[in-house]
Image (cartoon, rainbow, N blue to C red; front, side, top):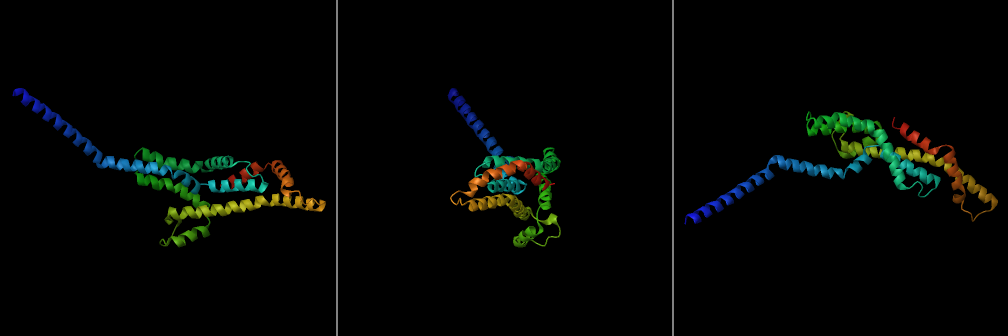
Amino acid sequence: MIRWLLGVIMVSSAVFAQTDAMAIDLSSFTSPLQFSSSISLLLAISSISLAPFFLISTTSFVRFAIVLGMIRNAIGTNQSPPNPVIISIALFMTFYVMTPTWVTVYEKAIIPYQNQTITQREAFVEGIKPFREFMLKYTRETDLALFIEFSKIPAVNSVDDIPIYVLIPAFMISELKTAFQIGFMLFIPFIVIDLVVSNILLSLGMFMLSPVMISLPFKILLFVLVDGWNLITRGLLNGFQ
């Protein structure tokens, strides 16, 4: 009988011990601190997928990629340089131009937040300011007024009152217009070469010979002689000085 009672007590103690352990685990799982950390981690992981779109939308990448692609079309080389090369050049040129802005974000937002001297909200506000200054510098007033008009926001008294969701699309269409203007100027000398070659072939009666095939070597030669890549890169970088 005594052995049976001792066995019941030991089993009961084990059950209560397991119950207490489950209660501890359950409370630690449902505590506000753990739940907040889980949400923050989920948001951080989700924001990684938006990083490429943020890079394209708020930096000089749009202008670089479009102009480099247009110069390839102007010369007439279909896939030379290939798309990965153009994207790589545009990306590293973007890193070169945007490094001062990113350094400012790191010094004014990331480091203070890591040192726990500012809150997460303050870090976000301080981190977005350098990007706002960069985009406002290269955004046309007409494009900015367009999105302010259709956003139905209250009257804006200063540029600091413009929401970021209004500034980003205005900056992007301004960059698109600038890139197409540069591309138009790049097309002119190569169109002249095509016209000259076409007229020469017509005067010689070579109607069946493609002018593009004849003019392509001359366009490549012209581009190499004037050191085209250096001139285009210099002009693009000067546009962000």
